[in-house]
Image 1 (cartoon, one colour):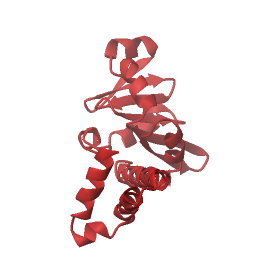
Image 2 (spheres, rainbow, N blue to C red):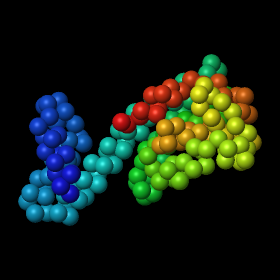
Image 3 (cartoon, helix red, strand yellow):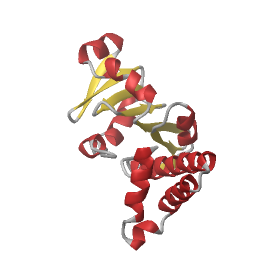
Length: 186
């Protein structure tokens, strides 16, 4: 709680433009409630502020999704963030790529327990080779399990592509800024 109060205080001292956003307002509301002795409301406001921060983080994650290739459409879905709140936190975004009857999706998930649990599997090239074919996308190694591609970037961002032949999905994966993704959120 002390960290949250210190964080809220720091936000209050920020520039007027920074204070004007909903996240800062919610944290201020939590601090006001805490100061007034309403710990229950302060807790609820901090939880809401965390949800808003996760949504903003997911919006930032969207920038790493490749644009749709010529002739394809891309539909972005950020609804998965609601589920992450119940699974210990994290951020995620998904894009569905479609052209006629063919479709596939690329999913990016960051900083959640499921991603952390996959670290041993996707962080070890030997283990990946035992589980399927290993394909390279730039300097990244992806596990290819019959057209389901998975890689762990920076030990905290899971990239998955599924639903189409590997040769269809690889060109889009090659467009991802993996260096930027590795630094995402830091």
